[in-house]
Length: 490
Image (tube, rainbow, N blue to C red):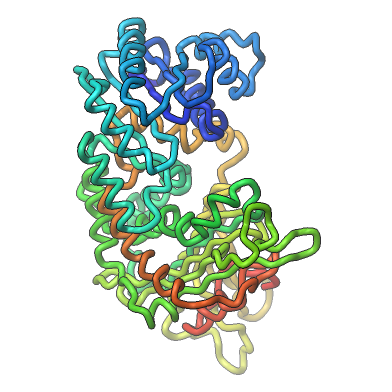
């Protein structure tokens, strides 16, 4: 059994879709494994009027177990509910009384985690009242978890951070990005820093380029209202993609601790080139899907303006101006309504300076580049593409793949991202959470792209559902005499 952790959880937005789909099932997994056992309590809050029993029944339904499951019943017995208006100061006194009661009942030592799964505009309000109304006046730890989006540009993110900083120190703030809880994202550090053969080649002398692809097969669906005010650049690039790129680009930390890892991430982001207008126009492209077969165009989706210029696809080239990566581009792309749903990283190594096998009388095909592919989802694993001799007479070469994929049994036992991250919050480990400096540098980079796009009127729609985005995304990389490793009809 795992080490038991002691804490009270207060969920603001506790009856939302995220809570029922991800948070409570993840906590139940921790309960079954012993990380949560006797000494924990949960207060769910929202404007909805519910009794404790009704809330417990809703949580039980979210766990996808039989109502008679004794373990699940014991788990939900630790849950209570308070209808709450986050803007009403008096409501926090009611919340404090309930928190103190649970603290005594379950012997929680004053440890409290405040999970803010609500609109960012309320972050500062909630944090302020938690402080002034005494909910953080305990002998234990106080930690606040913030769901994205953390602002919509640098200025709004700065305002949010300033508001939070009035009540909580940076080490108490956990900005959650579920991508950092994925098994293969965390494996990036293991592969890099745990293998001399990899890390010794992990630089611009041996790597030609690195590609990161986050492909989504579905459209905006019920998120249309939110998405039209966000787009792929803000929704995916500023957080998920920048976090992945940062893990790929950072230097080896002095030790495997959150302080040292975050320090190296910040150093990497400081060297990321922030583009001027001309560079941004050249190195980034955007797209919006049109109609295809039975699929409506983005502008015809429910709750989307018919003249919307929102981006549903982004591709770009990132450059780090430092000793390790100077001259080695990082290509990124993400979008909705693409060919399939997957996330992958392709590390393309440089070809030999001299291809000794490619001489006229042999008619051998040119050597292909070695490629290390990290499959993040839906399947987790690695592929290393090497060149080898074909079996038979003569001397011909061909690319072969060395594969490793997590098997079904291990995959089923792999913790869900939120399960990992909630566990890390209880431990006080900020390794897989974004620091304010990381967030601020990411926004400075993305804001520059957004400013350029706001000055231009795009020719939308410019790609069809089921493709890998607009032709401009291929032209972006072909201009550098390169190509995407994953491409259709290759």
